[in-house]
Length: 282
View 1: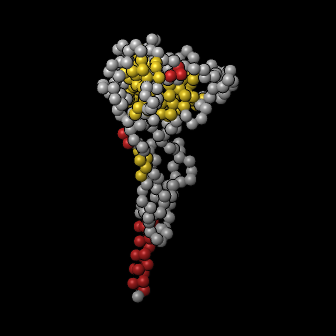
View 2: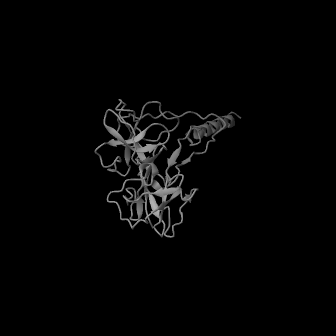
View 3: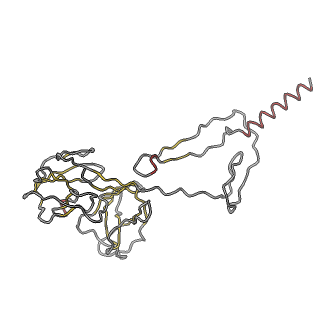
């Protein structure tokens, strides 16, 4: 009986030892996040959480393995709870900016790709005597004309060229129809297009500036894109051609406020661009 009792006790100890070494030891597992498509704008990141579970009896805690944070090479995987000592953490790789060219109007002059025509139609008459190619188009055939207040900087012509359908932004996807007299001529392509709109990594939406008075700053930076979600705008030096740093696959912009006159503000923050929207014709 003593021998049998000894065997049972050893079996229980072995079971406890195995439970303590299993991956289901009740220790919280980290979430793994992956961005579908490999670039911003191609999908919402999907988060996968490992299943919970584990033995109902508290396992024997194995020794904790700690890693000198200055030790080069991959961090070993230890058993049990992670060390409370600081360790090396691999930085998340930057995600490439998603660049999108939107077609809002087809060759028949009808809204496409989720764009809709707002009432009334037409909303007014545009003066296109000084029209130019839209600076936010990657193809020929997209117009910019009218006054700053018209915000008619991304427009598609109807087949008869006697009206233009102008877009507000790529999120609401509304179109305004304007009468044009005389009809517009064919238009070419801009040499160095700038995005029509930006979706930033923090979720803010920004639309390219169309003239107007925007205020200033003591550091001389000026507004390039208006943004929702507060008073910040996308900034750039007054002599710069663009506000966007496209030197890497992750585009960057400077964000900060403007004020009346030239007030002092903190240095602008650098924010990544998730999606850059341009306009195009099929």
